[in-house]
Length: 150
Image (cartoon, rainbow, N blue to C red; front, side, top):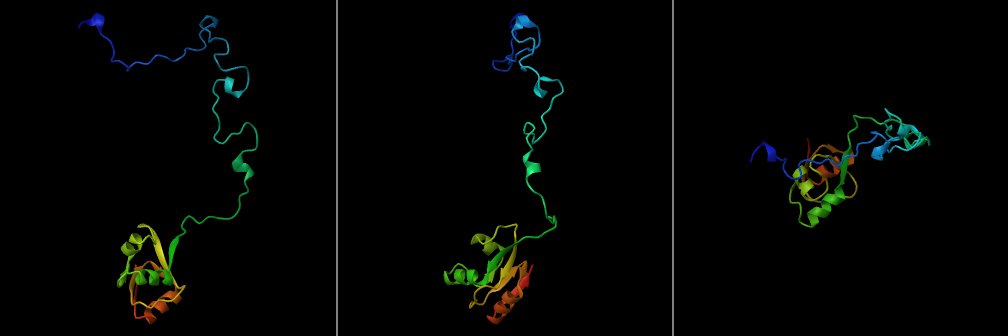
């Protein structure tokens, strides 16, 4: 091997780019493959995001109203009758915490959970989640259970 037979590795050099605007003889002179007139043929053209060729863009056609609170906390609701159903199926013994809810598919691991008061609870459970409704708290304590707010 010497300087006369050095070559780049196979596949490392790709020179299939078309050299446009280099005279008529090249076959890509004149308009340089951009067509005639219009914004796309001009230098410095950059398509605006959402531009629809002059048609009123979607983000301007859709009505906008209301207010979105960026600090809103969304709670995943779990009702008492759902918990009672899991107790009846033998999937919950005596404690209900986030890990138990995640394992049973009632919430995801990073969600905030709120126990809601629909249905009745007969089992004695120690429930520890983020929030409880007043009726749910009352029903849990009436059944001899314990309420722990995380």
